[in-house]
Amino acid sequence: MKIVLKIGGNEIDDPSFLQELADLVAQARAAGHVMVLVHGGGKEITGLLEKLGLDIKFVSGMRYTDSPTLDAVEMVLSGLINKRLVKALLRKGIDCIGLSGVDGRILIAERILRDGNDIGLVGKVVDVNLSVLTAMVEKFAVVLSPLAVDAASTTSLNVNADYAAAAVSSALRSDLIIFLSNVPGVLKNGTVIHRIDELEFIDLRKTGVVSGGMVPKIEAALAALKGGTTRAIVTDNKGAINVISGLPGGTQIVA
Ligand SMILES: Nc1ncnc2c1ncn2[C@@H]1O[C@H](COP(=O)(O)OP(=O)(O)OP(=O)(O)O)[C@@H](O)[C@H]1O
Ligand SMILES: [Mg+2]
Image (cartoon, rainbow, N blue to C red; front, side, top):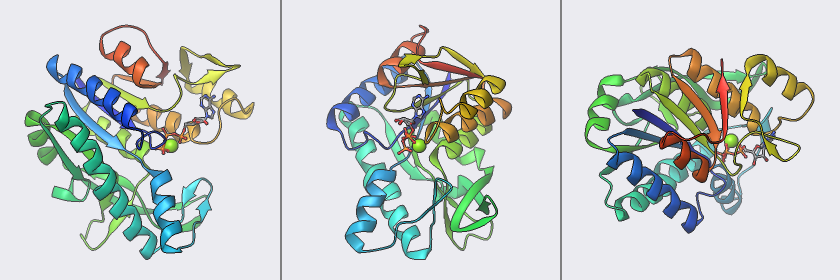
């Protein structure tokens, strides 16, 4: 199978999480699966911005990214976190390479507005360089940071990691995209909902059951399915191990 894993930023600084993740990827690679890991890292970006004394501003849940902020985003995501994940996989003996969407123009993006507002150097992926990505996944588990390049290759753009993972999954026509987060699935009254379709999502959002970071995640899952991905799941490490082994786990999103 071709599998895209979106790694949430909440636990990416936790050594035991990294170890479990590496076990999961090792198991999947041993079973012959193609693996692309797209990661976030919002918590650590905020940490660096605070250390640098830069303003932190969000517009409708998306980070306002001026030029100094973009530099910090790129340092943290394409440097620190990308290489931390790569090392965790290498320690397990996984053939693995870390790239950003800028490298080889893997992710090409254009600037977007958020609810009609300027949010700076933030983009949405408009094209994926499949030839580079395909060449890489043949040999390696690929760890990809969600920085993209603009069409003219003049600037990097900050892309929401859930959406970047969906774009990669669509381009690869992947069999499975898993949004790995710090929750076992989409929860209602503390219980995992096993399956959510688009209409149910609208309802869950209206009633406030689904909020915050879960909203872009389910939107991205729906986008991945519409883009040609076969299956989309929201879960944690444990759920992902089950799903990759063919067992039920987490919340399946259906278009
Ligand atoms: N119904 C719900 N079920 C589960 N989690 C929910 C729900 N509604 C809102 N959430 C929130 O969504 C969060 C997951 O999204 P979040 O954006 O924080 O994580 P992530 O995308 O994995 O990490 P990052 O954004 O740093 O990459 C959960 O921790 C929880 O607080
Ligand atoms: Mg998130």
